[in-house]
Image (tube, rainbow, N blue to C red; front, side, top):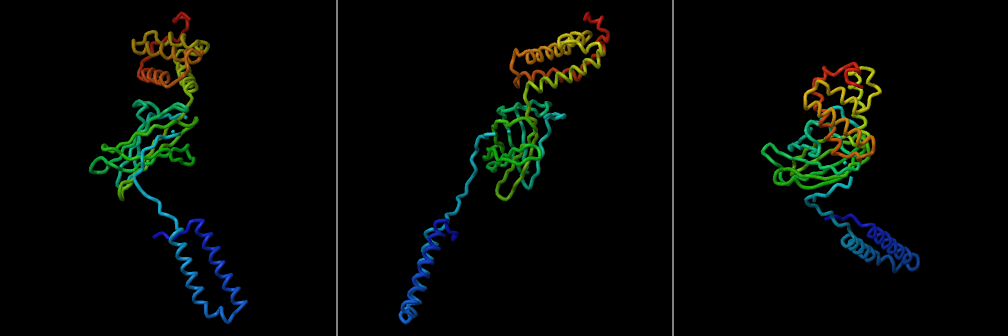
Length: 290
């Protein structure tokens, strides 16, 4: 039984015992001959009063139960692609995945964007069905905030949906527990403003183009750089170059609001260029007709 008193119970006990003591001392001063024989009765009455307060005004225990999945109210630039999940386990293996980020892409998400987070909990024997999962979010080297909790399904997974915070790197950590077993895992992501990220990526592309074409290309527009680089390139590379210029122009000239779709499209074309051979690109502007 929990015998911890509520704040009101403590007040009643303090006032009541004080009243008993005051009455006893008063009786002793007024009529000590009559008060002394009644002392045992005073003690019994005080004991009964104290026991009643402890029984009827104690704090109730906090009920326990399975956590219920809750939507998250709140989830710069990694140089590496989306990292593999890391699991720290003590009986449970926990994995965090960001299904909205395509495989091979850096873990970049938009500011104030809806983001899905998948947490998988496994045991050596298979899915950890019914495992309690807690999801936390924190800026790099910052304080963690609980953003969701729930119970793993039949396949050991649970899906959360959050709204990303402001710009900066974040750490997403999942903790799972079932019976006496536990485990945790984390993933990192960079929250960006898409218009700034697209401008940054195009800046890197421009630097690459000027390095390939020569210093005379510094005054070239995005379209001119693409046209010069695509001379002698294969069809896939040629299309990628023109698409990079088109996406940049849409954002830079205010024709389209930068969003995840444009960012993903730009990244796809930049990945094409990683495997392209642009050695045939002219280094003399006159050869490109510029």
